[in-house]
Length: 112
Length: 111
Image (cartoon, rainbow over all chains, first blue to last red; front, side):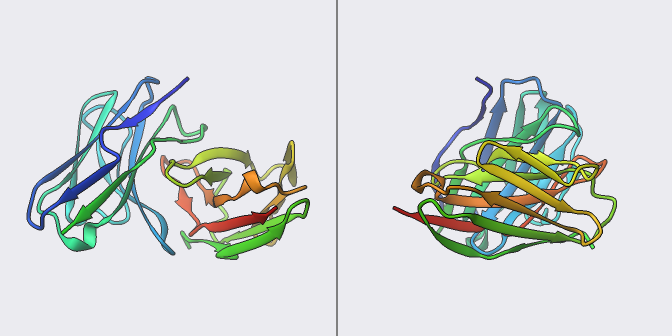
């Protein structure tokens, strides 16, 4: 069974901390995505990557960066966590543009 | 023009009834319209998808109806069951790598 694995289900971090969210997929997918999910706002794209070492900004990239050094791993970095980054973060991958996304189970991040 | 508008925000249906969720888009370049189902504590999972060259696609109790001229598409869940209680997201994409998601509909099916 194909999988997208997010390293943490729940995280609590302090304001100003640097936070790393990790995502690994075992499907040899080219495309990977980071979304945040907030009530009433749906899924908003933070960053995506269509290949190793490639990255593009999504709709809400401010305060975030990403790293994709290997095909299977896509990391989201909060450079200096703030309370307005408290959210559910979802990683997804896709084989190509004609295929659906496979999502991970999400990381619920609380910044205090 | 990049938005996908989804309604209703929440929906309560009796067991055995029909659940209907609607989405509307503006950009006529969109060419792929998936629906995702999300249970609490889980990531969204692809449920069913349609391309604009067909007006309807059915998979079991789930049907997408697509109206190209009105730029609308909808998800119909026939014989709704309590196990269908989840949040549903529509989405649209074109020949790029990213989807535009709707804001989600929380469905509750009463036993």
